[in-house]
Length: 373
Image 1 (cartoon, rainbow, N blue to C red):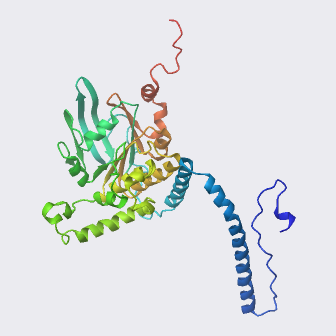
Image 2: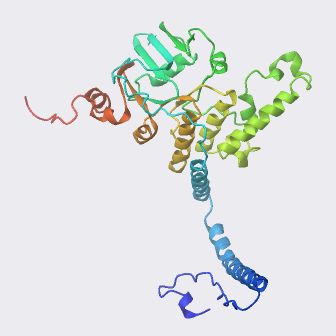
Image 3: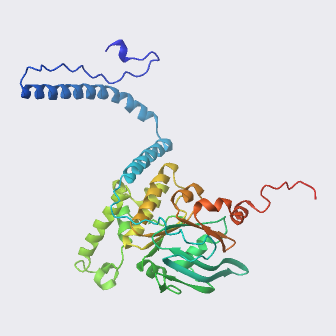
């Protein structure tokens, strides 16, 4: 190898590509084509040989890097691959919320052009503590709405009430025009409103594909008598498996299809829970702190998946403390504090809302508390 292939600072030599011999213009066209192909093959073989020579050094390096640090590095690399793959998803049939909120007044309880959820007078008390006291809230269809607020504002309790996991002391709400008061959570999900949780609910001792199949609606094998025989439900389960595999591929979890869900990382469990929620073909997806405990490299992947839900025509309502995420993907933001809705509006306007600033930072923000009166 020539001296030019090695840099002065002792860097690794670059892959050597042999010089391609010029082709005789007088030669027949077929000979010229053959010569060009042969030159390309020779160059590829030379480059492959150089790479094979470097592989032992890479193997030595990989043997040194072991333990949790190596696993985290692999997870980050997979996440970045997921981001690149997700961004490239074609979006031929998409729904857009652009312009939907142009005529909506930025105030608590404002009316929306086409609300999918309407909640009125919802109040939930735990003894003397009022956890939720919402006069009115409308959630716009086919849009991404963020529900934010300080810890203890009542966001998760409000989620529980809307999805039937808890019942209010008073109030009512509808989903796509259907009253949901007193409806069991599984029936709410069957109607098209599904949710995820702060702490993922994956069944650790079941495989990923088994977790996915559990999310499908109206499974014939869940009935006692039909479950004893295979022929009533076998075809339906095969169809559910095909649907599950498609979603696992979309969320880049197909490579862990047959692994136990308990072996997945925190970010992968979040993806699994989101993918499983889509098994019921929901019209509305409610995400409770989807970024909590997620590796930063996986956040962008999750963001793209959430955007894709809206682009497919679904409604998204999510609770989140990561304001960068809220600003990036939200069409509309609802702010809760002490159980009440204190502000609504586009994400770019809430930074100037004094009530929001006071709720997060306190009413004495910027004041000199040591100053004598």
